[in-house]
Every structure is written in structure tokens, then in C-alpha cells.
Length: 197
Length: 256
Figure 1: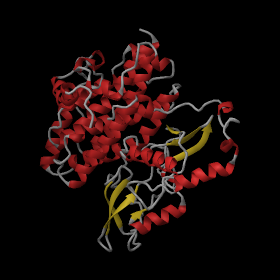
Figure 2: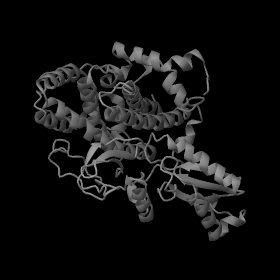
Figure 3: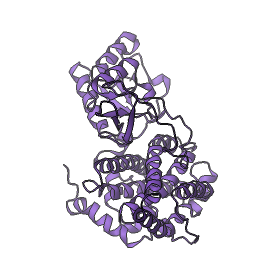
């Protein structure tokens, strides 16, 4: 736990529309200025999975000016993901380096992050990196607790190395909160699966 | 008691249960029966710690509405005595063997999922957002713990014996999660909190289903040990807090 201001990790209500993109900031009027910032953020790799950017991961939710302050809204992947603090530092450093000094980060919890937001190109890069990309989300229905997985048809998750569908889950929890551990029964290699949420 | 006093108390219940269980799970790191379980315990604990932080942060904001200032996450976690903690008694019970750890986890996960499902529709936007985020994580928690209850219950004679012993020992603490009280009721009426009592039938049905599949016998007694809502805990919480709080209490304001 950080000793920081408790307000820092709480969702903030969005300001009234009149406060956003005020006339005081010439950049705010320009769509291309915001596009430039999106580009900058798109160059920041996820600290734990460096083959995809934080934008491709879907955690940068909004970029906007509030008065003269650039506000970047970021949503955490998992509530306790330790990478969140690193990402905040990376965003601040990148913006400072590019000359944007008046900025802050807003944590946005809703809607809760979903692996559905990971872009197709990023999924392919995950696979090439050795992480099976996330499959379909279970949705919002409850887990069928008493139905249980030994009766459920095994989820067909392709091995990122040999492409075989004869794979099995070793554990739903892996080296980072967003990954599960799987194993391929054909090439016999273990692999990470980016679990859907 | 104003509404914000009630709300603070309610948020501490949510935060404290998450924090105390996270601390218990952290103690398995490096001691898990297999590496995958070691990692899984750490991950579930991390999710719960993250959720606890969000609840604490909001609790501090609510407190600032009526007190001179709201306490920080660290102050709430490290500078309260056991009598000021509001976690359910179940989560402070010792790790014991893996049967105890997994039974405690399953009883709590099944409750937690139902609870967050209701809270994700709270009229308090902050509660709704934190709950909706946590609910997604808890779905993985309950899938794992229920799977282990079945594997160990319907396993060897020895694993079954231990699972039944764990269920019998922890059952008396499970009922407290559904204990009705004025604070919970008042917030439920306002559409902000959840009337825990209302979750009991669904919990019993789901837990009963898993235990039946695990060939375990559901204990017959309905008697529940209560007390946490008044700050009356089992002796185990003080020891857990002593270990968890020793550094910030010894070196006030210490930073890494």
C-alpha cells in the first residue's frame, strides 16, 4: 500500500462539459493535437507484456483537456495489478519528454476493463510472443459453481507455439494477474493464456 | 449516527474482509503445496488487496465528509485495533491445512460473488463501480475454490476426511456473513448497500450443491458465532494484525 493520497486511486466524476477543452488552450481545439497524444501513449509498452502498448491493451480510456491540464483517463486491468503504478509513471515521463508538462492521470473504474478491448493486431503479437490471446468472455452470467469444469467441455485454446487445440489448463492463475497457465499436449510446452475477463 | 457514519462502517466491513483474507493468503507464498497453487493464492490475495484499497480510499473520502479529515488507506489498514476491524470472522480463521484454507476460501468466495453482484447495482456510483470491477475477479476465485473443494472432498479417504473436518470447523463462522443488522438494513433500504440476510438462501443452495458433489456432508447446526459487526473478534485477528502492523506502528510514517 502506498502512503499516498487516498484520492489518487478513486474514480473521479467527469467535470461539466463546459470545463473541458476551454478556449484557453489552443491545443484543445485541435483534434490532431489529441491524436498526437494518443500516438505518444501508443508508444508506451505494457511493463509486463512489452509486445503490446497500453493503448492496444485498452486501458487508456480517454485523453482530454480540462482547462490547460491534459487529463489521461486510465482503467486498471485488475484491482490489484502492481503494473498500474508503473504505467502511471511511464505516462507521466513520456508526456514530460514530449513537452506536455501540465497533465494528470485520472483512474476510471467504469466500465470495468475487459479483454474484449484488446485490438486484433495486438492479439496476433501476443500469440507470436508465446501468450495465447484471450478467448471469448464468459459474459456477465454467474459461474455455474456446481456444474463445474470437469463436466464442462474443455475450452479450446490453441497452443501459441504449434497451434494444437489439444491443450489443458494447469491453473487459472499465472505469472501476472491477467494470465493463466496452460500446457500443450502435442508439443508438451507450457504456455501463458491471457485469460478473458 | 448519520448516514455517512453508517456508510463508513459499511465500507470498512467490505475493505477489512478483503484485507484480512489477502493477508492470510499471503502467508501461503513460498509454502503452497505445489507451485501453481502458490501462485494462485498470491493472485487471489492480490485481487483482494486491490479491492480493499479501493474500499479504503472511498471510506477515507466518506469519513472526510463528517470528520476533520478522512484517514488514508495506510492509516485505516495499519493503525486500527482488532476491536475497530469489521471483517467477517470467517476470513480471520487460521490457514490450517489446505482443506481449511480452501474451505474458508470457498465459503467466502461464494458469498463475495453474490454480494458484489448486488453492490454493482448500488445507487452509490462509487460502490457500484468498485463492486462491478471486483465481481469479474471473484468469478475466477470461486471457480478455483469450488473446484478444489470437489477435488479434495471427492478425492482420497484422507483428503475427504480433512475436508469434512474443515467444513465442520468453519461452518459456525459462515453464518455470520448473513447476520442482519441495522446499518446493513438501512443502507439496503436506500439502495446503497446489501441486506446480507437476503443472500443466505442463494449461498446455501450453491454451497450445498458443491458440497454434495464433493461427497461432503453439510453440517446440520444453524448456530452462528457472531461479533465482528461490533468489533468482537476471535483471538486470531489480534495476532494477524500484530504481524501485519508491526512495521508502521514501530516506525511511524516509514517509507520504502
